[in-house]
Image 1 (cartoon, one colour):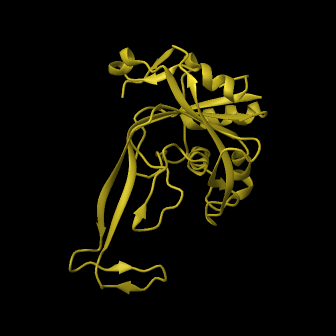
Image 2 (cartoon, helix red, strand yellow):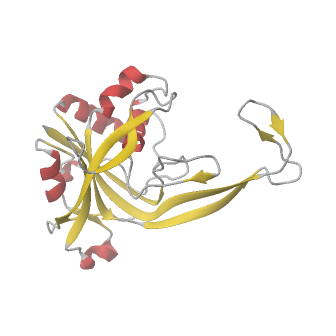
Length: 235
């Protein structure tokens, strides 16, 4: 097995799995569907292309909460001006008032994401695509841009020939310079279970993103000791 590492760092991130138009949620960590979407965008996989997307959904994923972030929300409106017209889902127009939308997000979060696969060539292709993506990469929403490159430099061993858990436990902590004197004693890590133990998450893609169908996966969360190393994140 080999493991590819990504860093998801930004002033705003949102990883919703149950969103509707007027209520956009976010989970406390990156979702499997969200990370799969990031990888698909880097590779230039079309929303309707399940054949190329499916191999990405088989990657085992773990998330380490290096900086959990603060839950926040925005108050937004659509079509609330008197002259505005709202287009309904069926294509018809409506002038019967605006829509108030509450959009939740995580502020100032930093996550280390690990993806495990026996296919080293696939991991190397993904690492290369993150450095030269076909489409814009964002942290859950198009306006939430990463503050740091998603790919790790060679000095931080972005692809390691070791199991996912081992790599996540020993990878240096993502910290800003102002935080490095406050290193944690332990870090929260959420890792996919090989069986049905743990918390169920409905964020496993089972079809193309055009169809928007998601199945269940199970995630086990635990606190792991801090290894002591620090990887500098300027943002």
